[in-house]
Image 1: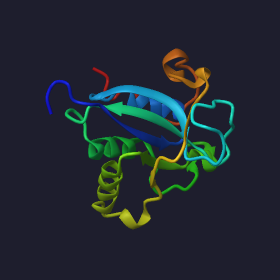
Image 2: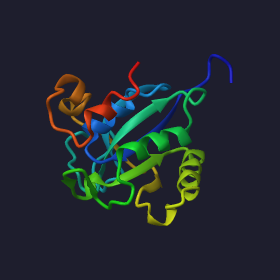
Image 3: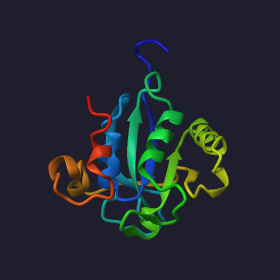
Length: 166
């Protein structure tokens, strides 16, 4: 690729999206994040008032594949989640707090599945790896929430939220 190469997108679900977005935004090679919801049962793309019917809280992650790979993004995600937990991360419980990796690019899903398959604990991993069927941007109050309100609660420790900051 030349200097005009394209950025790519992956949707990462790791429990409450406030902390996930705060963490992902610090990673080298990530050029944009947006709080949202993936793969739910209702609402059209972009409808922020459609509720959480089946959606997973996620972070739309735009990245430069020449700097950070899907495999590296998976490794980062696994730093901040309990990959064995079903519908539960930190103090948050429910379907919307499930873990997952979603994309419209089949190669991304193949790379995510390969990352999981290569782990010794692959048979215990509860992280969904699915095509992105629907995406809804979260309301403005949820965008970059911890950057604007650092005292808000989050299931991630502060040490992780600042681990990769320059």
